[in-house]
Image (cartoon, rainbow, N blue to C red):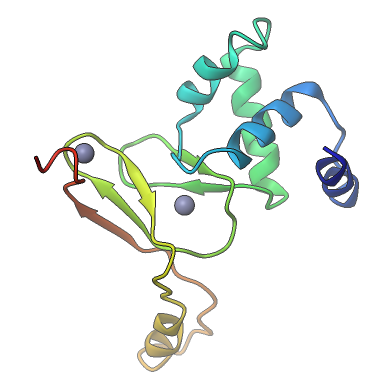
Length: 136
Ligand SMILES: [Zn+2]
Ligand SMILES: [Zn+2]
């Protein structure tokens, strides 16, 4: 709680209960939920919070780099409390998105630099496959 307060202060963000709730929710999950999923899960505890408010809180948190937006190509975004660069894999059957935790692709930036005049800063890589429960 104290860390969140300090982080928000450093980012000059007002500590609204909505922002706190959304941020805390994302820090506790690696499920890469959509805004709707976050909204539904927070409903019991925050019954007055609207979906629009969840969207607004997410947008603000993305802007200050506290969370990241993931676009696996579904037409809607998913959100990740882990802002470090890391690859993702999505199940083409159930839509579940997971992190690669011990698979770094930062060396790709150096590889890519050899093929462009751009200064390469980052990359976003999404893999697609079938998860263990769908593969049974
Ligand atoms: Zn699956
Ligand atoms: Zn992730």
